[in-house]
Amino acid sequence: MNQPRLTVLAGPTAVGKGTVSTYIRDNYPEVWLSVSATTRAPRPGEVDGVHYYFVSAEEFDDLVATGQMLEWAVVHGRNRYGTLRRTVDAAMAEGKSVLLEIDLQGARQVKKSMPEANFVFLAPPSWEEMVRRLVGRGTETPQEQQQRLETAKLELAAEPEFDHTVVNDNIQRAADELVSLMGLVAHTH
Image (cartoon, rainbow, N blue to C red; front, side, top):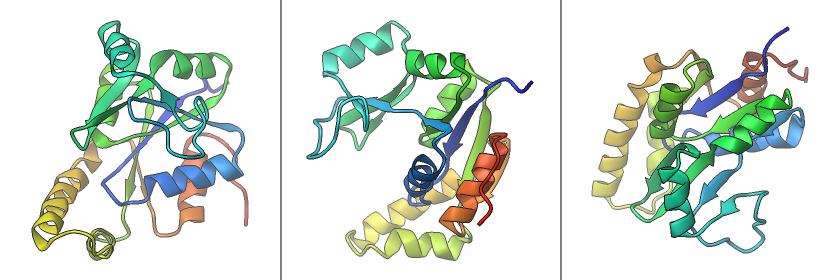
């Protein structure tokens, strides 16, 4: 009998991790998608415990200090986001297949504390496509774009640290492949 495993999905910025995990949440109810804790304020329509666990900066400090965070990070130098160890442990104890969609720093933290987890790298179809996604938004200055591309290069270099690579050439296909890697039966389309 396969032990319910924790699968960590990470990859470079703008590769579409959120889109793939949302597709899985909507189409694969048997996958338990981890909900992060954050210090940022809820946006309209966001529900505590569904989209995020909204906590104060003090509460977050306590969770980190007492070792209750599986991983955490400061995002854009402002708000902190993290994964509560107890919610993941509880889901695994119930025999659920847990999917954790996080950034590379987070994935490295999880690897330290739970090396037995299944680490999946979500890769862009090509470098050109990656550039198109990062630059295509047209919201950044050329300097900011350059910085993002440098970051993306470093992030892509992390691929060998992972157990598997899934190429996000098509959301549905990538999601199905990820679900198969989790040891679940993927839908046939």
